[in-house]
Figure 1 (cartoon, rainbow, N blue to C red):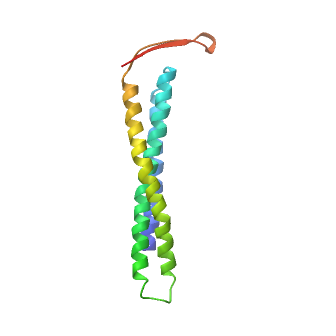
Figure 2: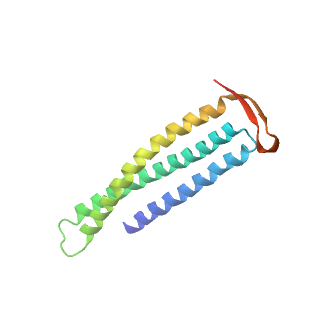
Figure 3: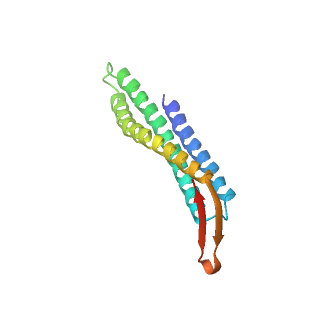
Length: 141
């Protein structure tokens, strides 16, 4: 059981690092754009990280809670080991982690879709910037 929990934790950490690496390529692709486009891109990357972090936390929290319940239910009959403490601590750690993840995941997904649509709808961009000051004309509908 300990090996399974260790595997789940390591898989969650690896999955998280893979998602962060993929989101940085979007920033490199959209370089030299207007201020509003760069703002939208930063928000897209931020909310993509929030979505993936929430997804990882929700899944990991659920797995920890289930593992804690299983360990706790198996340790009721035995009085010579500390499995009851381990099971209750896993359960008490998994519940807040799962709740936090299930809050962050849909918020990140909704905001990610919102700013992705805003970025796709941008057109008629004119940017003039002598001496780091300038103006931009953006038509968005």
